Image 1 (tube, rainbow, N blue to C red):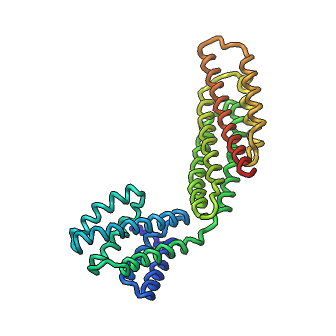
Image 2: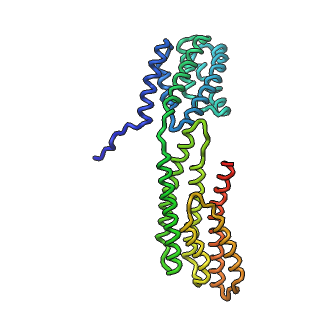
Image 3: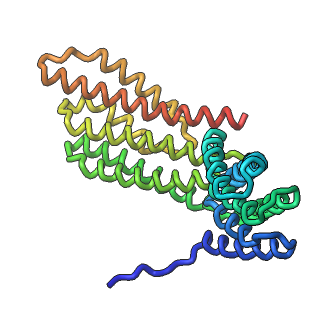
Length: 326
């Protein structure tokens, strides 16, 4: 029988420490239901700084709404189970409407403290707000330190750009020697997997900076995802096209240039000019004489259009970078 080894990750460690500290602090200030501060801390720690901050803010906002409702409901129906039911009937839809539904469970527990104490006054309300602030603040403090994935993302960029160049170079060889292109399709799929993994890391990196909204890596990998998808479509189309080498020469030349110049800081302007030139040359060619020749020429024209989209995607990204830095 196989057993999965038990691993104690960074988030698990943070959660346990925060829960202990929250209870200790609540007890130090002689708050009632001190254990609840630990529970709030557990429920408030998320994977990123921004999501923890948003969650904490929404829970505090939810507590304000819950407190106002508690005064009304408990004044009208006293401290009975019926009051709890009526509170939930009102609080849940209001929380959904105000986008504070993350705080429904926590604030419902805090409401139950009023029922247990059979009183609601400024002292008991202060107690509940103190429990909330202790749990939320400790969760925020716990996420001040997050691992820096900058080197990993930079390494993935280098791998991605190197592999893209390799695919482009091999595509030129395959086109010139009429080799099968299936292996290149698999290489594109592998790169797409790398991009998806990197995009997830990039999103977490962006979410782990409360003061700056740096989305460069997110936008970079989104752009590369579109490019590799287009490249894969081009390769699949080229598999079904049968034209003379002279017709493929323009596309082959563009991919050869792409294999040599593909980089983060290249905006693709030179390649776009090459594509414009290729369009002009294709228009000057003799018209196809047979249906098969027409279909192949049309397919080649579609490849050129996809190639243009691929380069335009990088050009747009490069221009957006210039706009941000200026």
